[in-house]
Length: 346
Image 1 (cartoon, rainbow, N blue to C red):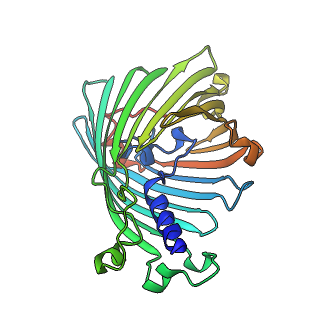
Image 2: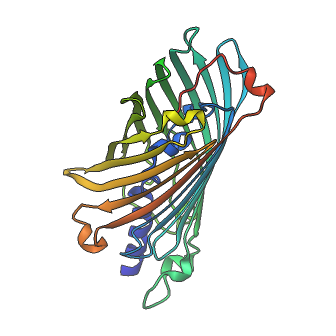
């Protein structure tokens, strides 16, 4: 019977204490953070984003995450833009190969509040289908696992929904400020693997909540000219999901030689600090250092997390590397119809 309780505890832990994937590149994952950011594309009308992250490999079979998205402005008229987006995410972690695959479809409306797009707001919504699974064959025990014998499922499927809003203030092309907020998983789906066994009356789980926590995301940033060739791009994000709270704050410093004209390649150096709050436990989790280059319509960013929490004794200070690529497309005639709304860059 002890194995039964261990397994039930495992199932509850996977569902109750798991968090959504979090990225350090908050400047390079706008549509993942907030559905209102779909279609908010600077100097183009379509965009493809790829993010890849690997973490905690020095401790165990760590997290491997890949996120891809594509969004586009499909309609524009008199200061209003409608955007759509497709978002895909895959994450694998742990010795049981716990895998999460998410597919999302988003719709957004972007509106300029004045003639020169000094104030721009957007609202968006997204529906996601999520598949989670783990490898039952990798469960280790001294005897046949009772829940497996009863027909424990290794797959859980569910839908989640999210909504968001953002506001951009663009007094001129040398500075801008933005603020956004989103609410994800507000339907709080059941994410356990024991639903079938519960329905058959074979077991009765009593480990507290088995529904995915609603996630609140608040993010902000800006761009400010600092002399002839430099800009400061601060950004920050606060995430609240169940008992977990996290904050990431820092900035890029951008350099572009204006003497080289509009074809100059901007280079960026950045640093962020990530803090956490888990009930009564709080502290600094990691320092994030990042480099970035914008080569024409493609942005490349590479960062590394250095763990500074008490977990560093096990991780030896190593966190995870993250790579992001953003490519913006300009579709000629279609673009000219959308030029009356200015979408600032991030």
